[in-house]
Length: 168
Image (cartoon, rainbow, N blue to C red):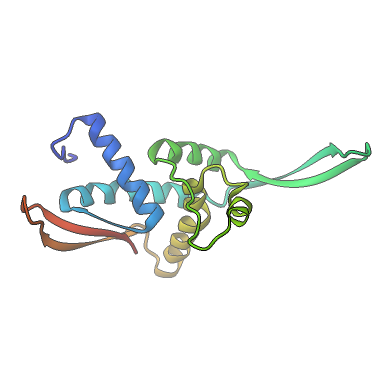
């Protein structure tokens, strides 16, 4: 039975969504131990879904006409049915965090880097996180265990048990 965390169901869902999004984006967050245990379960389900479907792609040839009226064939790689369904499911489970401009990165360079990316967090899950853990699963023969919880001790003020949760 899931923990209630002293919140209503809608508040709890939003809290898990926000913390899972930040964990997947930054790789590590600090929170209370009870919340970390709930976020672990939520995040591992997202990663497992992405791992099962990240390779489902289809190559399609598109024909279009250019400015001179010539037909141009272009091959485009798109998501297969399973990956598309998984992508849509993950988009309902996480908040879409936006890419941040680098410290000494120019506006033009930032625009060029992010022009084709509509959903940066979802792209990161499918392009970086899922392949990394799929490879780990093949090497170790183990699925799951994508996160680690490190206890920090009690927080000053309310003595809540604090923890860091990070992607392994």
